[in-house]
Length: 473
Image (cartoon, rainbow, N blue to C red; front, side, top):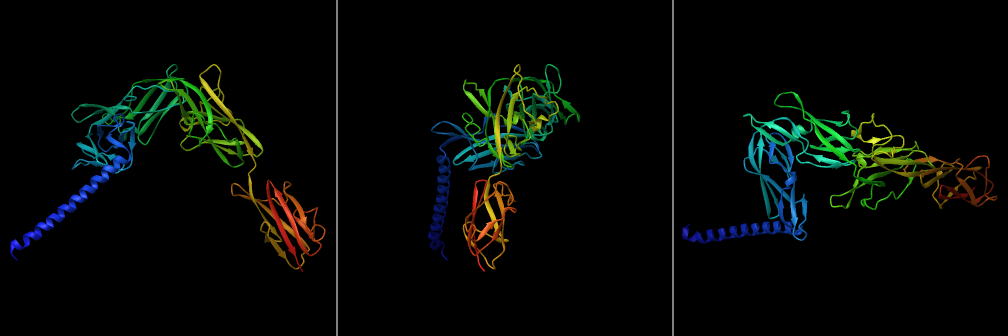
């Protein structure tokens, strides 16, 4: 075929391809613009207070991304529609949620985050330097009040193969292995004022009462092979708690929340939180859920109290019906001794907790009234045949007796036969003296004296049931 004859065909094909590619690129750009515009985001950045630019080999780190809104200038955390990537040939990896896993070799890489048409990048150095010891409690000075929690970022000393020091935040391979020691400053004994716990590569200082403490960190040095103990870190715990109260756990308005329902059915559970009011740096009131760091108690065994798995609420379960129990909560130095308590699991007493008037402590109480389980329905049989409320059942053969068996179904989906319960009443509304007579000696038993329809009303704990029985030959 002559080249001149096929040249137009080649040009047309090339034009179609370019047009298609251009349309696809334009479509992608429009989608990216829509993503940012939909959330009113005009710029993105990595949070400066939550970023590490030097990470150890084989460690992990969770990157996050902030976006600035155009109308309010507010910074918000972006979790959806963020595309994460690394520079080419990186041995490290990052997933769609920003979870970064450092490779086994030292390298310098770039972490990229794209949100719509906006792109932000940061250079990260993966270091092979080895951990030696903790040298600072936190990367910045902080203040904390009693019954508060504060995330901390311990700073460690690392040494590379050339003997060069790196002073940086303790990485994920070390943070979970640190043993934290907390002592009182005045007597140097193990403190019950605070403890440090680590979860998901994050250490947190949790305080229970005010006072001065000393904190030390023990960890295995990769340099010496020995467990090294840090110097003393002095920390003051303030007594800036202004008020404490109990609230329903479901209430999110911590300023105005109360315990709205103090009635509890036997074997049911209600959940409470303790709310502490502090003074913020700007002079305003700051209300926080302090359940985790509070001390809890109960005045009797009419109910059982336990902290939830995350210790963010107290679960109260009713044990004895038609009784009550007083739930108490305190923050600070209470009268009761906690020397034998594992404060890392929360402080819960089987007796009331109370404050000494001469020490820094605030307390609150709430009486919970425990009632019997609510009855949701009654189930009835007559001579072993099921009855339906208000619907007639025919008993043929002119039986000598009608024997009712009554079962109560409770709100916790349990059931109990209550035929002989003193709170169950039987009332013959129809057929009394002509069709049936009640047997005064046997509860639920009726003597048949004639043919016809008998109507019996059963009442128990607010629930009623109409038994209609037609007696035939």
